[in-house]
Image (tube, rainbow over all chains, first blue to last red; front, side):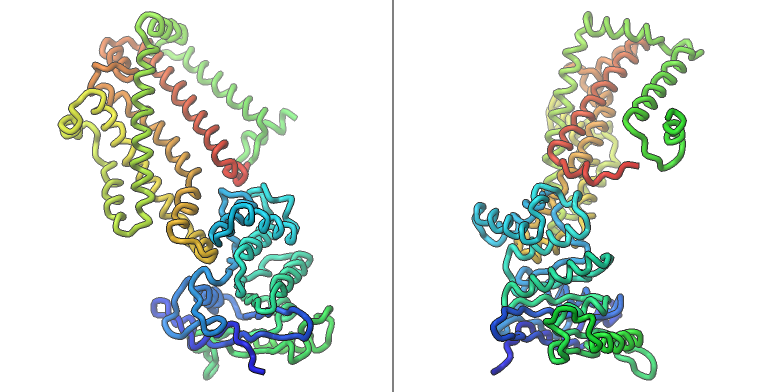
Length: 267
Length: 264
């Protein structure tokens, strides 16, 4: 059986001014199949601050064009802006619209009739425990609520690839666990769904992902070369560190975390 | 209780409740009145003289009609200003129009007085001339402020709509037009105040149609200071009423603005 490629990032390079930000970066996301269980993909892109993670997400989302390389989705299809969901780090929402209004805009853009859009929006607000906030404005929401509204807004228009920029940033342990559950829930809504998240939170990325790629600048003669690449990749499924409850309590998880942290520190 | 209120009122970066703020306002008004009454300047009319002059202007000199003429002029010019300035400001999303808008904005450095002649030729004088001059004066400032508001919309807002799959026209409507309504109202509020400040000069150019600005110039010519201050007082009250009304309008049309406001 041939693995189905859901996302193919191939030889992507980006230069800003005189600075090479991303250099010949490649990775693929394939459909991870579990017999009898709908399992979407969660891929973590780990990297230190300033390595170009957000730039890479913008290229995958079709917001910026790379200088070289390609980004393709299923069946080699190109991914123009709008074909990929993107949760920005600051969770931007339309400040002049209510929570429900923000979701309805996404529904209208998708071409849904008003009644259908309302029904879907209310279903999503129920799913994300936001039904009581439907008539609130974004200024009335907490950070966690804004994040959930942003995710719900992106899901109003079903797309199989959802990008998340630093979803674990600034969360307390309870909120972190909740967001991790949410990511898995969203990914598992469809077999072909992929959540691609960038973060520098090693433990959270490992706990939630089936594949972890580490981004960094390769070192040569003790000095890092310009341009981020995928330095290491970890198949969490192969290592038996995905799709289980309490993964974080497994000794293998701690060992791998120690290994990744060591490599992270070298970057 | 009183001590803590007083402390909050005089220390920096402290929030005060509504009652304390009301006490402060009444206190400042009383202080201003005290200074006024105790003023040694003989040329400054007393509050009693101004109230008397106001009664005369209202009952004997047709002040109500003059106010109506001025409010009508300002409303007319404001309407034109809003249409012209918003169209120009929103047009800055198209690169081709940016030099035009930048040029229109720079016209604010020109004094209105020097423009009377070309504007008279263009409008034929009278009421249309006054509307044109007032519109010009307000629109150049409105366009400058509003174009800056559009320019400062974070790129993330546009990208957010793009990843939702919105067309560029929908993005302009949602982010640029609807997303800045509160700021447009705020800019308008400042510009209406500017219109009131310009009204004496504009109405002085053609006094035939009257207006409160023309009235103040006539009283000033005869050095009737009590009447002049009475008219100024009425202008102040009208301006404050309009400002308050626009604040209420902003709260009704954009209730989300007050939610994001931090009290300190």
